[in-house]
Image (tube, rainbow over the protein chains, first blue to last red):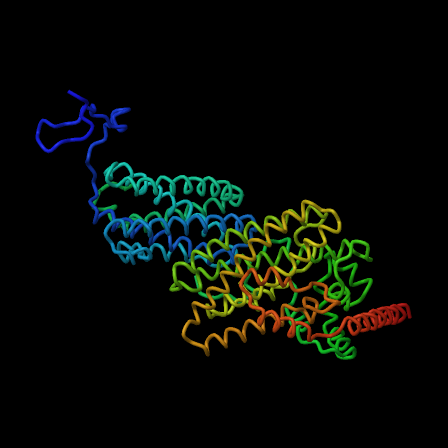
Length: 227
Length: 319
């Protein structure tokens, strides 16, 4: 019998090729399991985009009010990378059945989180660089990093892989932003009073963040303070 | 945080010295009349003197009097001219603070117009990164030439003139007016770098010029988009841009005149989306200021009067 190259119409007419998949090498141990369905992921991506868009806007507002030149120029880069993050989240939304026009959709999880964002954006005068930076880099971005990492651990690794990929990319940049800010804040907080201001600001906003439920509004429901 | 900030609230560290914008603003309205130019600069003399105290411009004031800026504005940069390096540093410092204000203008557009289209925000965000790099580049070029941040006073009139509270006018002012001026200045700096064989400056400024062309293009596209279907709004925006261009011509120092210190970068501007008609208009309105001859004569009179006043003050104190 000659080698069968193409499947026939009856049950015994299989090709002679052995089953093979690139995914078997190494063995694919992932399971089809995730905490978030399409709708939940779409809602979370809208929430993520809301925080990124407002972060970009508030940093833009601050550049003119911050006297330290290297902080101004450093924030310029972070603004662009934050805008790109918001843009990538927007592009994911139509893929999650939100409609083709959803690319510009942002959604706060609740009013309390929207108020938290406005509280982060509140400092205005040039003597408040420490308060501006600690709100963003000690509270908001570390929270985003935790939530994004958690999403990647808990979502379906195969079905929601596009979200995981874009979060991985955004996370790499967020960690760079945090490393930059750590150096900047260490340089700025040159005495005990400035260190105390940073701490006070961080604690106040952290409490407000937790009370709001965070970027997805689900902190309380999950009963996991770092969710 | 409030929307829209006045130019005097731009935050600076302790190296910077601020200059009253009145001096820069008045340059845009000078007539081609020696007496009028002399009168204006004599009126501003105390303000000019106060603003240069302790800066690298103080020796220029002491050598040329309150009209020293006229000698700076009215001749192309020349490495062999008297005070050639000081003039180069003065321009480089002016570019540095101009980039700082361009960064602040683009960044404020993100906060001041929260309901603007997303693509507009993306363009402004990109511009923030670019302008941040330009600030870094010109700080390094300043050092490369032997200068330092804060060595000359900063006028914030670029931000004041360009940052309208209307989005179409903001991009017309910042992206077409200010960034268009940047194209002219950078093309001139590239010419200077070629003349002095400064490969570092030539390459760096050439990259910056490429960015600025993109920023002007953002402006050209967003003015069109914001004013789409509203010819009156478009005309008001164009009138605003003409006003900004007039102010940014410094009485003809940036123009198409033969004696211009900074010629209009015609080809770069065409690539950035300016039309031939707009550039002819720019050439006409920027060339309206006093002639080189007028300014040279005014500078001479101002210098003589300055030394005469100084001598008379010296006699009085001696008696």
